[in-house]
Image (cartoon, rainbow, N blue to C red):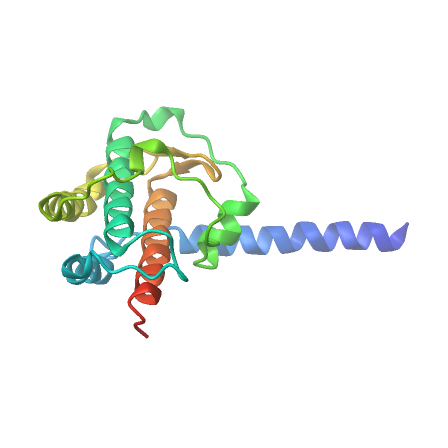
Length: 183
């Protein structure tokens, strides 16, 4: 009985430490937090047609379009949300993923709204890129309790949503680097 109680207390304490640590990580306050990722996306647009089926079934253009759509749709959702409807919650998947900068490959299904079209036009990538640049600066005008509902991570406030954008974008940039065999 004592071992179970100690194990339970240890698990609760560990969850509190991880949760507290992840809260600090998820407080994105620098409007330039995505500058390097956005610059890398822009550099990869000319490489849009590259494909490496051993890494991904889709080409670089797909990952670019999806990443930019995700940034822009999340920003749109944050602006359209009601900050009064936000309620904080603990979500273990969110805490582990966002605090460890990790999204497993090939495990999640993207919502239709952020899926690329069958034909991805280069000019559309550049338009989305410019929108993303503006949105990532403007989003700091939104209320901190502006929110976005993620299908796995639940309701995210502005800071958590921005952290998700950062981790999600890096996830797709890593895939693109592997497709391109970059280090």
